[in-house]
Length: 139
Image (cartoon, rainbow, N blue to C red; front, side, top):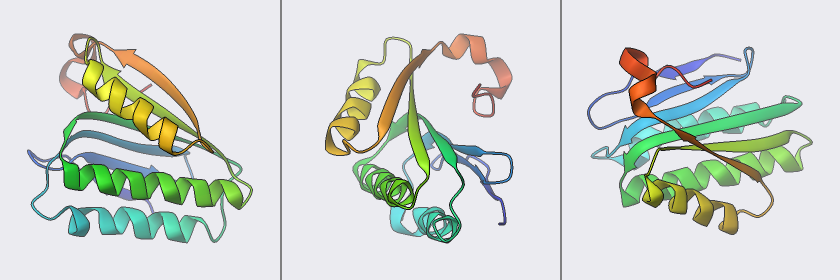
């Protein structure tokens, strides 16, 4: 399956979806003018993945900020992950939030409450420790 990578911009997040290496990540800011247009390839990619799902997926979200339109698309991504799990894939969500960013943590907990079928892990990070490659480092 083809890798989907989108470099971050001032209004869109970094996206790296690669079923071969097992990297499933979105990070950065998500305030696109047209969230539907930006997220459509991600949702389509997940649809294709569900045709031959891998054994496991850890999908990592590390957003600095996102708007309401993006939050709806993130929810759609989570629904796609539930579909993958129903197809036999062991799915977990890693929700990363910046140290002391209680709002992003709370949003992640809200998603976990809404999508009870997925396992969520919440991980705090210090943006100062990420340095120059803060979007690309996620391990």
